[in-house]
Length: 95
Image (cartoon, rainbow, N blue to C red):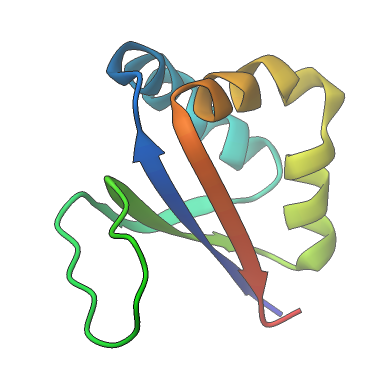
């Protein structure tokens, strides 16, 4: 069953984010993941959250694939680029 994740990123280092964008799609694809949609154009409709610089909806074949992507030791340098670009929060749902 397809599972989704939402990534919220407050970018403080655009250079690292640019480097992550070059590698991020391949890292996702390694575990069957894709970007459903990503955008810097965000509007909070309800609630009191800080609006991130960008958000992305990710899709994986299942929970195991999402966890494998996140925990893959071969992808830690790629994840470090995202994490080093600012504050990154990723929420898996439908698990």
